[in-house]
Image (cartoon, rainbow, N blue to C red; front, side):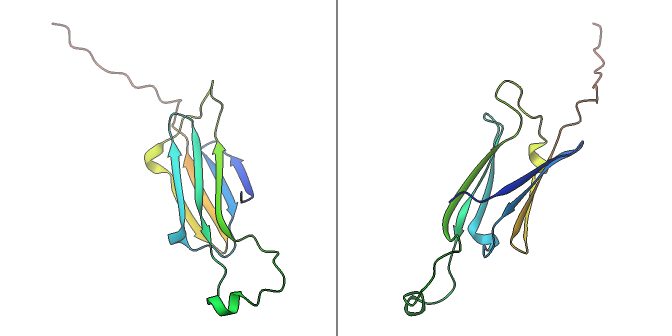
Length: 116
């Protein structure tokens, strides 16, 4: 299944909230694809209980099992300028929060060139 997400575009970063009730952090992976300017969130949510208990399931409404969600930041023609080394993710209270900092494009680096 594809989990639901909210994306916030602040001045300093993209902040993504992904709804993953019942997920454990060790079962969730987050990757950044530089070429596609795309965030990939994948993993699995297990239904709690042993095999005998799970056989007694009478109503099946919760989303469990493998999941994957891809989120493009920017466009192919104009990809988001991301500080890849500073991306963080935290799973808390069933919500995965991913902070994707933007590069400071207002900063101009001036390099001195020696004249020989």
